[in-house]
Amino acid sequence: AQSVTQLGSHVSVSEGALVLLRCNYSSSVPPYLFWYVQYPNQGLQLLLKYTTGATLVKGINGFEAEFKKSETSFHLTKPSAHMSDAAEYFCAVSLNNDMRFGAGTRLTVKP
Amino acid sequence: DTEVTQTPKHLVMGMTNKKSLKCEQHMGHRAMYWYKQKAKKPPELMFVYSYEKLSINESVPSRFSPECPNSSLLNLHLHALQPEDSALYLCASSQESGPLEGRNTIYFGEGSWLTVV
Image (cartoon, rainbow over all chains, first blue to last red; front, side, top):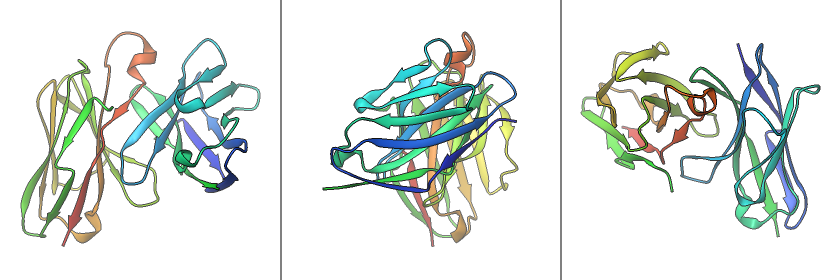
């Protein structure tokens, strides 16, 4: 069965600093990997996804993630954090409509 | 903007009440889902419908009763709930045929906040 592990339940950065949220996956077959963002009191919004092809995936709001098979990782990055990026971020892996989420990482952005 | 619409956004119900959560999508998706999310936790899968038929029930108590009247609508009927059932209930949808990429990309609604008193 597939699964993901998010390293760090809480990440705090200063505005303008690099954002790095870590996700490692476990899957017996090539995975479909996703990052979702959840703002307070809202549903989940798809940030980006990796299916096949290019390993560097660009998403909305300036986020990107790189699929590294050798490291079984799919870390989320953004060069410069903005106050509006403060939210909960979930990494997920999906196979045949069965999507499994990581525990989530809360991103705090300090002024 | 999400293309999965959920109503109501907030619901407060007593333990003896019967209520329903509703979900609608117009993306032509034939797979629809109910997830439950407790505070500071990831979403947990409850039910999956594929072509209007229940395909996955993650051992959800019978006080939660899903219904898929047609390919665009998904309901969750609630009866005799407990306070611990208070949570955010998320509806989602995805393609059910075609390339694997589409079948594995799930789109979520804004959720319905349920409080059981």
